[in-house]
Image (cartoon, rainbow, N blue to C red; front, side):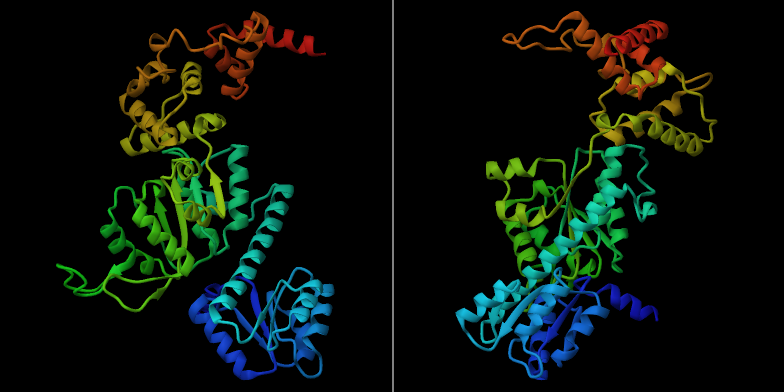
Length: 477
């Protein structure tokens, strides 16, 4: 029972591909071609056209490969019925006759594409893969729309290692749930320290793939090492290759290959990665027979790849192959509601690790942390928490206990720049009242609407801030 379940989960695509043709020999030859050259394994077969509609009613079919000339019920009649009863199913017509009028008529009746049986297999395979990819994207869009409207997560446990209460992160999680089971690459963008690898692990868990997640940082790998690391080599492929070595693409078979810092990949290695994604196969060094790509590809970068491809530093065709599913992890400064939650969590970890009691935290500590920009994001916040707990001895922890970054801008008033705010010489200066309102709004946002913390950020008393907020509300009414 378990073996069958694992086998089912490894099928591609997630939905079925139904072959409707009365010739058993064509079923066999087309099925073998799809499996061996396209990696398409979720195949279903129907030889009697009279049973096709019943089969569609009882199976999750996304793509139909339909012959036109069949006894009992013609493919054209079936196409009309399927277009009406199953409009979401993509129908690829494969006919034995090369007739332009027939092809135009099939497309008018709702067929996704039209091919002749004698057409070269490579063109037919590309057309079928295109139909599958379109169906995957349509289903993902429907799922994403449903999740956004319902504001729910089906598997929140997959994100248990990512501590957040940010609405922007919840939206990221919803999107990732909707694309988790796709076969297409996922590009994870975000600044260093935002948790891109944690995101990759969560999506791999959600995908249900039986293989493991294999991670490699490709920054700085020259072409030879990239080749050997990803694709492996045969014995004797080069000097020192004393035995065969499996590459990471093969290690991740049935699972996910995560390529970190993809923006630093050399031009020649970019070509090899593009070929892997386009052809779905690779050659170990020294091998003369290709192996099939059986892993899903995730990539991550802290760079703006769209800008790098415009500059010519990153291949445009590779960029568009990788960004089918793209997610941007917001920096910590854009989700300040997580600062207090994360600092407390890391402080608890540090206290437990060092066998110390967890200290209390003073309001001015929260004010200092909320005012800081965190260029190192969550990774930097963790370092601050561990260092501060290790140095703290008694009493409530204050901003003076943040020794590790005591000279960093935002944590030490003595290091503030005299030109924190810059005004364009050609624009009018804001009035004092406008500046007052803007500062109060920003301080309240950074303090997560805690007036005590916001007052400390502004350098005024809490009653004075409360009075200003009350005056703002009166002016708005």
